[in-house]
Image 1 (cartoon, rainbow, N blue to C red):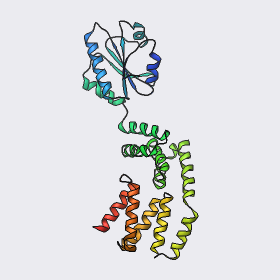
Image 2: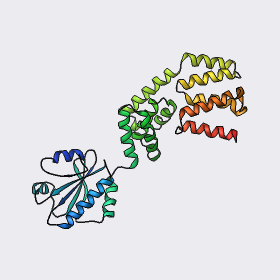
Image 3: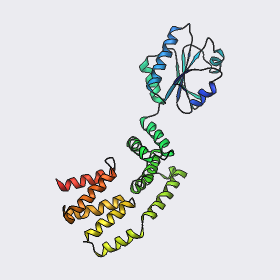
Image 4: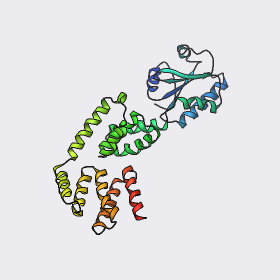
Length: 281
């Protein structure tokens, strides 16, 4: 449906349904009142500034008296804001554009809400890699349960078990719903799958020979493949803190390769880049 439309008896149900998804400004005007046409133009301009968030439905009260009566309009022009099929706010007469903007800002979604909504759509499509940066930005603005859960979901699907576990630990008891329980179950399964016989064998061997850097490299590789990157990075960083050229530079190179694989936007990678730079400089 377009961002601006004429509201009639035939499409009123569509408009009410649209208000379940975004804010709808219903402007009641009349041809014989020029100021009401000016207001309609202003509202139409504002709608173009908020695509997908605000639509305008105009009601010509000279031809749609029944609708004016349905909404109990007493004077023209009048503007009503609809949300979830019900009047939410509004004003009578003509108001300055700035004043109208102030009213709209009270009801339009915040930037983090838009990012969350877009990311949730991407998660439903299975595109968690595209959802991750949106959720990271949303979480920086708002840490409430809906954002944290979606962020944990995307982190879990991308193999960042540590990140997902950290996010799920922030969920308060009152917010631990079925979505939370599902993610906790998925995390438990993923952690069990990541604890492979190969990793356990390498850990036992390294415990017996803690100075064997070849074992360190093998275990770090196995941990990374199991998405246990925090453990892999800590394992590689330990010998570097004593000798930057450990294993003739192979440990440092493996650490850099792992950081590169995690990407620039990864918080864990950023943490270990700073640690490595502190050793270098």
